[in-house]
Structure formats: structure tokens, C-alpha cells
Length: 178
Image 1: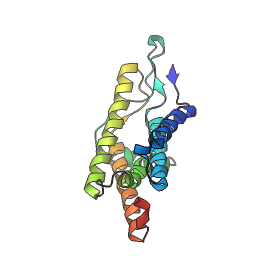
Image 2 (image 1 turned 120 degrees about the horizontal axis):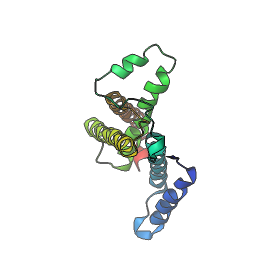
Image 3 (image 1 turned 180 degrees about the horizontal axis):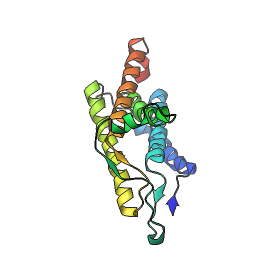
């Protein structure tokens, strides 16, 4: 049995944020509020893409769809070279954390250096892989591969997102942070 993400799960998340930000002591400028809402939407989408469906172990249904682990850097990337699915797999992993690298400095002003973004993205990507591994192990299903290349590509994506933000800010859109 698989638990699938339902989009209506997003409503209480965004509504809770809206209610909290409605209190006079928690109010922020509308630009910041909108950035926070986009970030919450992005985080929900990230969880949906990386952790759902959640397998629920049923002893007579246990199946192994994939073989568990890849700790050899660039081997998965090399495997996809020249295949039709290259951009879906590689580009998807890069795109996964690009919004994170773009939005984090807008949410937390002190996280505004390349090394901080890369470090935070590394932690997030490793957390995602560990949660996927935990899901595999607890359920007995092997729906996802735990792959070092995913971590490398995710961190690359976050750094690209951060670089894009820096280009926009350098181009004169300083007010985006306010």
C-alpha cells in the first residue's frame, strides 16, 4: 500500500502561516509575506516530490523495485549520459534545490554567502536521502535509490539558484529582500 500526497494538504499549511502573520506582533511587509508563502509552497512541493508516495509495509506485498545505494560519485550521472532520460534525471535533481538556493537568502538575511547556501543545501539533500533510506528500510519496499549523485546535483542546483539571485540583486533589484 502507498500513501500518496494530496494537494489539499497544502491548504492548512498556507492557512496557518497566513493566520500567524495576521497577528499584529507577527506582521511583515507584503513582499516578505509573499516570499514566505512561495517558500512554504516550495517546501511542500519538495516533500511531495522526494518523499511521496510513502510505502506502508504489507508483508505479502514487499517488492524491490530498485537496488538501494550508490556511494560512487558521478556513476549515476555517467550512466544517464546519452540517454533520453538524461535531462529528466540530471536536470530534475539540479532543479530540485535551485529554488532553495534562491529563496533562503530572501527568508534569512544572515544566510547570504555561497558557502552557507552550499552547506545548508548539503544538509538538506543528505536529510532527504536519509529519509528516503528510512522509508525504504521501515517499509521493506525499495522505491528509491540512495545516491551520492543526487546530493551532488542537488547542491549544484542550490548554488545555481543562489547565483541567479545574486545576478538579479547585482542587476539592481535590491528591493527584493525588503
